[in-house]
Image (cartoon, rainbow, N blue to C red; front, top):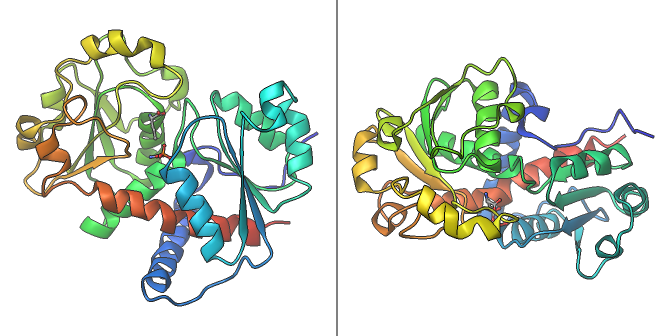
Length: 306
Ligand code: CP
Ligand code: NVA
């Protein structure tokens, strides 16, 4: 079974540039309304179900608060307390949940889990992070860059650290928005080419992380050990030595370069305190913008529902 006509947001590449431009405009308007306490309830009586198989602060809060602010309700489920943790097939869960709500957000492990869930869902499904992708965060980051600098097309983003879900979403965003990504990962933690579209010409790999920062307009990184990989932490700490984003690396970037991190961050590991807490850092804007872009996304997907 597959409800082919339903629009989901499972990867960054699921939307076109036109759709992102529309959503960015909506996010700007929705943000303005929020800042001026103007009630805006297009999703009255609509329900979002949020399924978390991993921990979260920002994703849960931004979706739950966002749905409430749009006039709807949000229900939180996790693997521990739901039947998902006791082996109910994902296809069955999708059919049941999607008969009782208007939209579903999932944070889980492999991308194939969310793909299978979406194939059996009657309502739109949003990826709230998988091992391979984190499209909502990269959408918020692109929105944040555009807010600060006007346009991201033609710019250079330096990705320093692990080849993880955030990087794969950045590589898709580069294709959609027309910017370039300089990637530097330690040996043995290289890009998995199976997760990059074959024709993607929008990135260059650098052995030396400082060289990847040269001339960058945005320097960004993420934790060295993502959720689900905790047993590798000690080995990764050694392998990633030298990949910290510190003042010396920011010096190689353009003078007006921004620093981003999706958070949570480990000061002294992937980023130094002076960088993340310094004047080039926009990490709190990134976090806040999760709320605004996801409200635009919820409005778009729910109201477009067939
Ligand atoms: N950046 C992000 O997705 O944060 P959480 O894990 O707290 O949701
Ligand atoms: N790459 C990180 C992002 C956390 C928001 C992880 O998957 O744990």
